[in-house]
Amino acid sequence: MRSGAKIAVISGVFVVFAGGVGYGAYNVYDGLTGGNASPAGDTTTTAEVKTGPLSAAEVDKAAKDFLTGWAKGDEAATVAQLTNDPATAEAVIGGYRDEAHVTDAVITPGQAVGAKVPFTVKATVSLDGKTKPLSYASELTVVRGLTTGRPLVDWAPSVIHPKLTKDTRLVTNEASAPPIKAVDRDGVELTKEKFPSLRPILDELRKRYGDDAGGTPGVELVLRSDTESVPDETLLTLAKGTPGELTTTLDAGVQAAAEQAVKKYSEASVAAVKPSTGEILAVANNRKDGWNAAMLGRQAPGSTMKIVTAAMLLEKGLVAADRAAECPKEAMYQGRTFRNLDGFSIASGTFTQSFARSCNTAFIKLIDDTKDDAALKAETEEVFGIGLDNWKTGVASFDGSVPAAAGGEAAAQYIGQGTVQMNVLNMASITATAKNGSFKQPIIVPRSLDDRQLATAARSLPYNVASQLRSMMRVTATSGTAANAMSGLGGDKGAKTGSAEVDGQATSNSWFTGYQNDLAAAAVVQAGGHGGDAAGPVVASVLAAG
Image 1: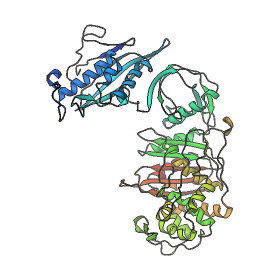
Image 2: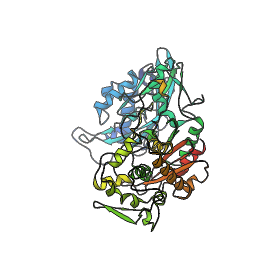
Image 3: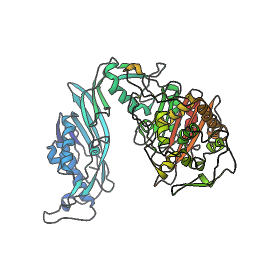
Image 4: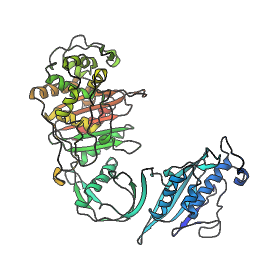
């Protein structure tokens, strides 16, 4: 095949062209690995169970047998026997023709690299007289069977299509929901091409609201999940439907800034909300897996959590913004020692200074005085609306969590470590609550669209507490750890930095959250280090666009 062999499928019947028919003369098989030995010369007798590394000829033969069988339209069960997981492979191989409705395809193998054999597929998908070309690249890997010693294709659904997983399948049919034309708050169209981060969100909005937006469905090849809550991903449109218009709370300008900001760092996420209303203005991710971590992620947020801890301590009267607070190099609580970054201490200073410099020990030393290990959990839920699993943003989201904890684990929660789990939407919301004084549940489509019940908080921040909290965040943004990142912003502004240590990760995750006037944003950069160094510039860019 290295000379350009092609295996084709015509009108639902797989045919191997060995020369002179349809596509001209091609060698069906000519050594993918570049070896000169004949595959037949390396066959294993039934009496021998071969072991050890695969030879080039064995890789060639296993790849040839599988691709040829798939291409010829052999029974799915027969082709599946050429893999190391035939029971699973059979359904996927059969579904490629029966559910995806591939009516012709040309498979062109490339040069093998070790046991990996790449190939390209150029296909036509056809249903009810509607056809469209489809092309993609995939690869297979040959392994030795554990019990038989035979060279076999190491089964993975991605062999058949690179986006297939064990929980998805390819289906061509009338779309399960009409297409939508999603627009921002000012009527600007939001497309996947212009705003790649919105791809999973737009897919889910279509699934949830397509029927209500007034459109009509088309015919599509989709990647369908076995999980009902996961929307179809359209891979190919055979016949366009009529889109209905759906208004979101997003702001195209802020979204564009968010998309650009996360591109500067790998594995970065950012979200922005309007404190006075809870409206989500931007959600962006730069991740290899394309996952919407900004709304679904679950990670320790580091010292950005000190916004909540500070609010709780202020409410209990254990601290005040201008009152002296101890900040030693280290502090111990129930056998667990906590230290400040780089071992700094503040000999004599206020709680505002400890907050602005992100002094861990100033917070840990006060946990005994609360006389309640569950105090932080209560503050998070009752005031900041986090952790009750009742947000209805309009798409799937994780609402944050501060589980019940005791002892050293409860102390770790004070500084955003341990069992605290947040994503950047949660932290943007927390910052918005601090700015606004009361919780407004984040939303990405208006409540009036479906009359859903939004989450509420049991109580607002007392005015004096909210005022002190904003004052401390303002100092952090002007002369504390967030000052460099926030230096280019004017108006009423505040911020908090965070560095979250992760087991097995040499560099901490960079967290940053801040507000400017009526816009709050939070970001995380995996292994980005100090909060102000990586996540800080992302947040500042988004705030500047608001």
